[in-house]
Structures are given as structure tokens and as C-alpha cells.
Length: 193
Image (cartoon, rainbow, N blue to C red; front, side, top):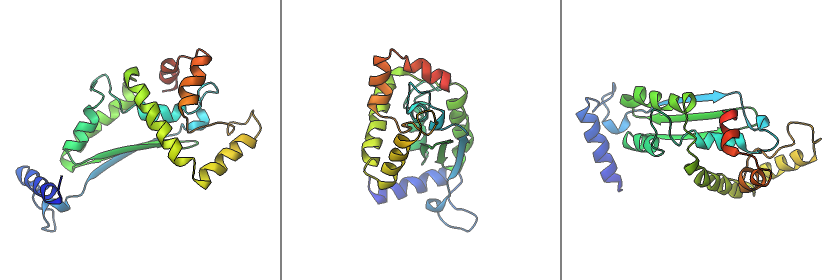
């Protein structure tokens, strides 16, 4: 889509909804986005020993549909059609989820967003694609010196310490090892959530 098309669409949408100018008299292109974030006090240090990377996997999977909004692409389509974006990140002790959207759609966005935590579907049909996304993220990140240093620390620390984990997750930790140990990852995910 060209810049001209983007500007024209943003201007016409704002004018239709009475948002053609902000309080300083600027055009619809300058309308700020409304945003929301939720951080929970659970990160990869909470991963069960048989499912390294589970917190990161859950972070990905909650966006794949809910009981109220079951289509796995519904959230992405809603954000895309209303100028929004989302993302999430899993750290050692926290996982954060956030989105932004045109202010006129914040209330509807919050209803949809809250459903990820109240009633996620964890549709297993989406899991393979999300494992591939996590694997891709890991492959890109593993060349970072800070990530390498963190993994060296995790590998050298006492096995009983919570930091002795692979919190990022990859295909081996999320699919291959659990399958070999007959771990039901969908059940693990629902219990973890």
C-alpha cells in the first residue's frame, strides 16, 4: 500500500467518525493511538522442568482465539482494520502483552484482549505455526552476545536452581523432548495458564 493510500484512508475514516482533527486542529493523520498493556508476574523461571519455553509458548498461543472470539485471525484482523498492532514478551519473572489501536476502538479492543486471559482457546491447530515462530525468534536471537551470555550462565548454574533453564524455547524443548517423554503440551499449557 502506498503512503498516499494510507494517508487517504486514515483521513477519510477520521472524518466519517467525527475525528478529522484533534484538539490542536491537526488532521486525522495525527490522531494518537490508544494503548494498553498487561504484565503478569510469571515468566520463564516458572516453566515446568519438562517444558522449557512454555511461558513463551503461552504468550504466543493466547493470541490465537478465545471462546468469545474463536477465529484465530480475528484479533489480527480487528487491529489491522483499526490501525493497531500487538506484541508480547516473556522475561525471567514477567510476561507482558500489549496492543495499540485507534482510540475509537479501545473499548472493543479491551473486550477482545481481556478474553485472551479469561478464556483462551489454545487451539492446537495453531501450535505448529507458533512453534515455528518461536524457533525463528530463537534462531535470530542466538547470535546476540547478551543472549549467548545468558545461556552460558543458565548452563553453568546448579541444576536445582530455577535459572538453569532454557526459557526461550525452541522446537526441541516444545515439541521433540515433550513428545519423547509423552508430555501432553496442550494440557501443560492449560495448566500453566
